[in-house]
Image 1 (spheres, one colour):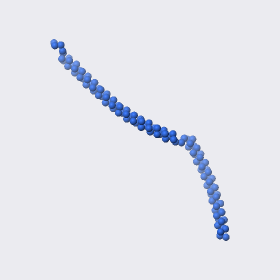
Image 2 (spheres, helix red, strand yellow):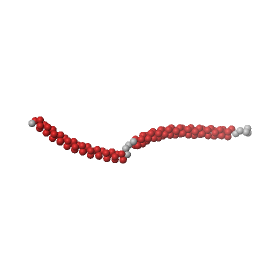
Image 3 (cartoon, helix red, strand yellow):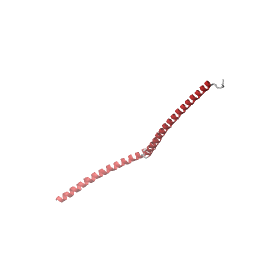
Image 4 (spheres, rainbow, N blue to C red):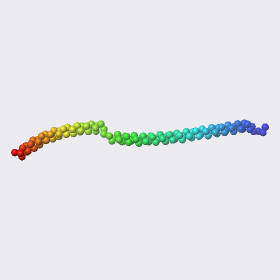
Length: 112
């Protein structure tokens, strides 16, 4: 024997090659999967940031709206204003009647 079993050496070399190919394949799969995950995470992060901006705008709009107390106060003031306008309308009708009487009286004096 010359000391080296070439059949066994070839078997272990083939085994080493298969292990290296499997290692490279697993690394490639992991790297592609990792890149895909990073791309998806970037998309999700962008959507979350866009939603955060929208929520901030909505919160700002809501904070600028009148409260229930403000609306109630406005209703009371509008009701009061309506009553005052009704009083003014009655007064104007009375004044219009008085003005008609004065006008008729003055017109009667001119014709006589």
